[in-house]
Amino acid sequence: MRLSVRARRVVAFVAAALLAVGGCASGSSVPGLARQGTPGPEPACADSGFDCELQGRFEAVRDYLEDRPGTSGVVVRDLRTGAEWHNEHARDLTWTASTIKLAMVVDLFTRNRSGEITLSTEDRTLIHAMLHSSDDRAADTLWYRYAGRDHQEFNDNFPDYGLTSLVPQKGFSDYFPYWGFQKCTAEDLDRLMTFVLTELPGDERDLIVAEMRSVGAEQQWGVWGAGPDARPGTKDGWSEEVDGWVMNTVGFVGPGERYTLTVMNALHGEAGYTAGRATVTAVARLLFAGYFPA
Image 1 (cartoon, rainbow, N blue to C red):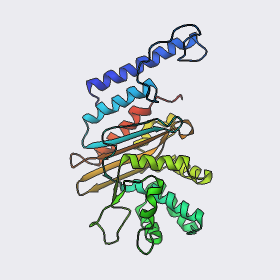
Image 2: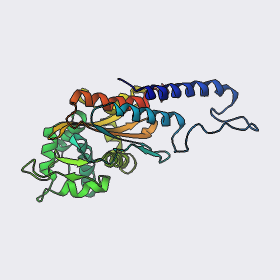
Image 3: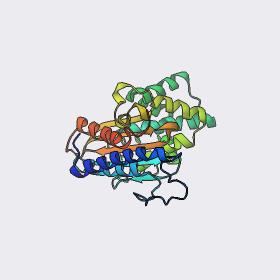
Image 4: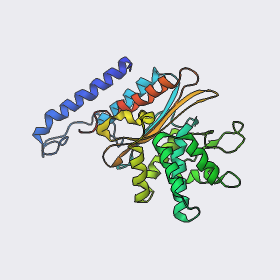
C-alpha cells in the first residue's frame, strides 16, 4: 500500500496522539479528561461527533485515494452517536454488483414476516449462499421466484430499506429489472446497512450479522481489512461492467456493530479486480485497523 507524504504525516499524527493519551491516562481516572480544577486542553480537532483519531484516519483515507485508480465513494457512520462522514464520491451512482443481495435478503425477510410470502427451507439455504459466498445462481433463483409478475416487487420495496437512489439499468438483460444490473450510491448502501442493524427484528438482524461475520474466502476483503479485533462483517460485490470494474464493500465493525462502513470503487477502466480489491481493503485498514482494543 503506497501512502502520499501527507497521508504518512496524518498517520504519524494519529500515532503520536495515541501515545500522548496513553501517557496522560495515569493522571486521571477517566482517560482524556483533565483533573478537576485544571483547565482542559484546547480541542485538537473539530467537534464532528468522531474522535480526533478517527478524523485523522479520515484524512489519511482521502490522501490514499488520491493516488488510487478510479473513484471511491466512502461512508462511515457511528450508530451510537449518529455521526456520519463521507467523501466527495459518496453520492456517485455506481454499479451495485452483488452488494444488492443484502437488500434482497432484507426484502425477503420483510415480506415473509408480513405473510406476503412464505420462505421455504430451500429459500433459506439460497439466502445463506447469497450472503456466505455471494452465489449468483442463488440470487437468480430467488429473484425470478419472488420478483412478481411485473418483475418489480424487489425494486418497489428497496427504497424502504434505504436504497432511495437505486436505479435499475435497462438494456443489459431480457428480464427487467434484474438484480445484476442496478446502480446506487455509497450513501444508499450505508442506509441499507443502518436499516439492518437498527430496524430489523432481533432474530433477523442477528442472522444477517452472523452471516456477514463468517463469509467465505471470496469475500474476505473490503470491510474485512479492518482486522479481527474490529470483528468485521461484510457483503462484497465485484463485477466487470461496460465502463470497467467495480469493487464494492458494505458492512460493520466494532463492539456491538457500532460503525458502518461502505466503499464503492468504480475503476473506470483504469485498473481491474486486483487493484480495486486492494483499494477498498486498504480503506478499511486505514480507518479501523488497530483502533479497537485487542
